[in-house]
Length: 148
View 1 (cartoon, helix red, strand yellow):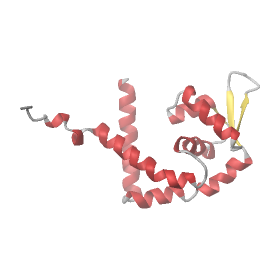
View 2 (cartoon, one colour; view 1 turned 90 degrees about the horizontal axis):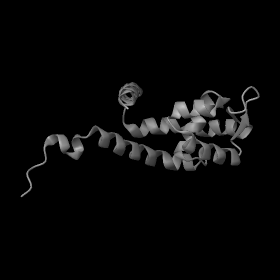
View 3 (tube, helix red, strand yellow; view 1 turned 60 degrees about the vertical axis):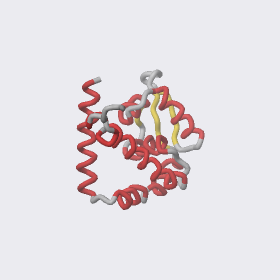
């Protein structure tokens, strides 16, 4: 017979699994909302950054989204092909690529306006509770990154 698994090794006691499974559920919840506006979840994250601050560099986008250029570049190419953004090289330093919204990308922001409210409603949490959870997760992320 196999001895009982210690509590520390039980799946339901793993913070990583709680985060992973919550992330999967969140992404599934977003899918039909984003399908309506023609975006994937990673594309939506890029657009959120640009709606917040238009005209950022690819490296700034990568830092904000915790994505490397190998992951980010195909996302940007696809969004550019769909007419939502443009990429141009900086005049001061041609190694720097600046990402800007097109008019179509700015219009899309209006179509996305109700998405956060849908997520809030589905969460079963108050705005204050979600803000606290977000803050706790950001602190956790910071500690984990510091440990890398």
